[in-house]
Length: 88
Image 1 (cartoon, one colour):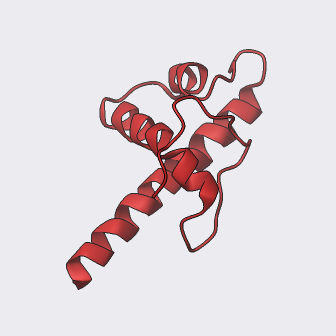
Image 2 (cartoon, rainbow, N blue to C red):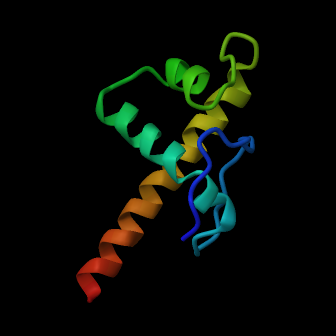
Protein backbone atom coordinates (compact mmCIF):
# COMPACT_ATOMS: atom_id res chain seq x y z
CA UNK A 1 0.00 0.00 0.00
CA UNK A 2 1.23 3.47 -0.84
CA UNK A 3 1.52 6.21 1.76
CA UNK A 4 -1.90 7.89 2.22
CA UNK A 5 -2.19 11.60 1.49
CA UNK A 6 -2.39 13.91 4.50
CA UNK A 7 -4.96 16.30 3.02
CA UNK A 8 -6.39 14.82 -0.19
CA UNK A 9 -9.15 16.23 -2.40
CA UNK A 10 -12.52 14.65 -1.62
CA UNK A 11 -15.08 13.39 -4.09
CA UNK A 12 -18.70 14.21 -3.28
CA UNK A 13 -19.39 10.47 -3.05
CA UNK A 14 -16.98 7.77 -1.87
CA UNK A 15 -16.29 4.73 -4.08
CA UNK A 16 -18.66 1.78 -3.95
CA UNK A 17 -16.37 -0.75 -5.61
CA UNK A 18 -16.15 -4.22 -4.08
CA UNK A 19 -12.36 -3.88 -4.04
CA UNK A 20 -10.04 -1.35 -2.45
CA UNK A 21 -9.35 1.49 -4.90
CA UNK A 22 -6.55 3.99 -5.35
CA UNK A 23 -8.94 6.61 -3.97
CA UNK A 24 -9.39 4.48 -0.85
CA UNK A 25 -5.63 4.17 -0.40
CA UNK A 26 -5.20 7.93 -0.76
CA UNK A 27 -7.98 8.56 1.77
CA UNK A 28 -7.08 5.97 4.42
CA UNK A 29 -6.23 8.65 7.01
CA UNK A 30 -9.52 10.37 6.25
CA UNK A 31 -11.39 7.12 6.82
CA UNK A 32 -9.64 6.68 10.16
CA UNK A 33 -10.52 10.24 11.17
CA UNK A 34 -14.17 9.62 10.21
CA UNK A 35 -14.31 6.40 12.22
CA UNK A 36 -12.73 8.12 15.23
CA UNK A 37 -15.16 11.02 15.03
CA UNK A 38 -18.09 8.61 14.75
CA UNK A 39 -16.89 6.63 17.77
CA UNK A 40 -16.64 9.90 19.71
CA UNK A 41 -20.19 10.85 18.74
CA UNK A 42 -19.14 13.97 16.82
CA UNK A 43 -21.84 15.85 14.93
CA UNK A 44 -21.70 15.10 11.19
CA UNK A 45 -21.66 18.83 10.37
CA UNK A 46 -18.53 19.39 12.42
CA UNK A 47 -16.86 16.36 10.83
CA UNK A 48 -17.81 17.49 7.31
CA UNK A 49 -16.32 20.92 7.98
CA UNK A 50 -13.11 19.77 9.67
CA UNK A 51 -12.31 16.48 7.95
CA UNK A 52 -13.89 16.87 4.50
CA UNK A 53 -13.49 20.65 4.22
CA UNK A 54 -17.10 21.14 3.15
CA UNK A 55 -19.17 23.86 4.80
CA UNK A 56 -22.47 22.25 5.85
CA UNK A 57 -24.11 25.69 6.20
CA UNK A 58 -23.34 26.58 2.58
CA UNK A 59 -23.76 23.10 1.05
CA UNK A 60 -25.79 20.93 3.46
CA UNK A 61 -26.78 18.20 0.99
CA UNK A 62 -23.29 17.86 -0.46
CA UNK A 63 -21.71 17.87 3.00
CA UNK A 64 -24.08 15.21 4.33
CA UNK A 65 -23.72 13.00 1.24
CA UNK A 66 -19.90 13.20 1.35
CA UNK A 67 -19.81 12.52 5.10
CA UNK A 68 -22.29 9.62 4.92
CA UNK A 69 -20.73 7.87 1.93
CA UNK A 70 -17.15 8.25 3.16
CA UNK A 71 -18.09 6.98 6.63
CA UNK A 72 -19.93 4.03 5.06
CA UNK A 73 -16.86 3.27 2.95
CA UNK A 74 -14.62 3.46 6.02
CA UNK A 75 -16.88 0.97 7.79
CA UNK A 76 -16.91 -1.31 4.72
CA UNK A 77 -13.11 -1.30 4.62
CA UNK A 78 -12.98 -2.12 8.33
CA UNK A 79 -15.44 -5.01 7.99
CA UNK A 80 -13.72 -6.31 4.87
CA UNK A 81 -10.29 -6.21 6.52
CA UNK A 82 -11.65 -7.97 9.61
CA UNK A 83 -13.25 -10.74 7.54
CA UNK A 84 -10.02 -11.25 5.61
CA UNK A 85 -8.07 -11.55 8.86
CA UNK A 86 -10.49 -14.12 10.30
CA UNK A 87 -10.32 -16.16 7.09
CA UNK A 88 -6.56 -16.62 7.48
